[in-house]
Length: 342
Image (cartoon, rainbow, N blue to C red):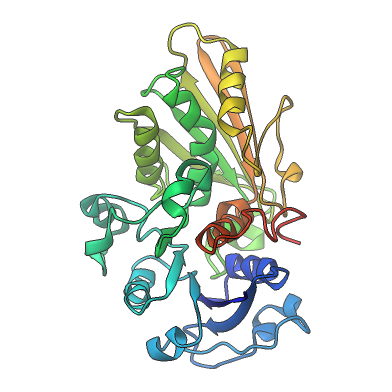
C-alpha cells in the first residue's frame, strides 16, 4: 500500500533532502508540495537537483485541498506558522510529522519565553511524542502527530541520555559544544551565512540563548529522572553540512572509560542508526547518511563525549522518515540504509 505524502514548506534544504529520500521510498508517493511564495513554480525550478525526478508544482496551502489528497504531511514550516496549520490537518484526520519546535517542549510558558510568540495550538503542547525513535519508539508508533527533534539536541541527547540514566555522569556542570555546517541556518539569505562572511572563519552564536537549550534540558531531565541544565554553545563552521558535538560532563563516582562505552553500547546495540565507535568520529564519516556516530573518553574527572551526524538527514529529514516508517507500520530503515541523503 502506497501512502500519499504532502510536504509543507518545500523550498528549504531539509525539504530537499526529504524529497530525495521519499523518491526512493517504496511505500510513499509525494502528491502535494506547498510554499508561501506568491508564484507557483515547479519544484525543479526551486531545486534543480530534482529535474526529471519529480513533476510537481508548488502551491499555496489550502486545508481542504491538501487534506483531501494526502495521508501524511511533513511540515517544514517555521515555528508558530507550522502549528497554525498542523492543528487543522490533525483535526482533519491527517497524520503529521512536524519539523518545527512547536510541539517539542512540554511547557507552554517555556516555549513562549524562548520563541517569543503565542502558541497557536496550546492544547496539544505536552501531548505530542518527541520524534527520536531511539528513546521514544513506543510513543511514536500509531501517533497522529510527531514532533521531529532538533538537529543540535539529537547530537547531544543521544550520547548523554544513557549515561545520565545509568548515573555515570552528574546532572550538573555539563557543557555541550557544537559545530554546524552553514545549511543549518536555512536557505533564507542572512549576512552571517554569506560566503565572504563565513568562509575561512568559525564563530560562536546564540551563547546562553540558543532556542535548542530548553529542548536539550527537557529530554535530558527525563533521562536522568531529575533536573538537568546544560551550557550549550553552537558554532558556525565553513562547511555545507554536518554537526560535531563535544560534551564535557563530570563523572559520578569513579566510572571508567570502559564503563562509559559499555553504557553507550548497551543502549544502542540494537539501534540501526546509532554507531558507538572506538575512534574519534568526524562529520565526513556520516555526511549524507542517517547515522549518528558517537564515542566516549575519560579525561581526568570528566567524561568527554563526541558525536556527529548530518544535520539535514539524521538531524532532520532522515529521522522524519524513520518516524514516518514507524507511523505506517513499515520497517524503520526503509529508504534510509544506503546513503540517506544521496
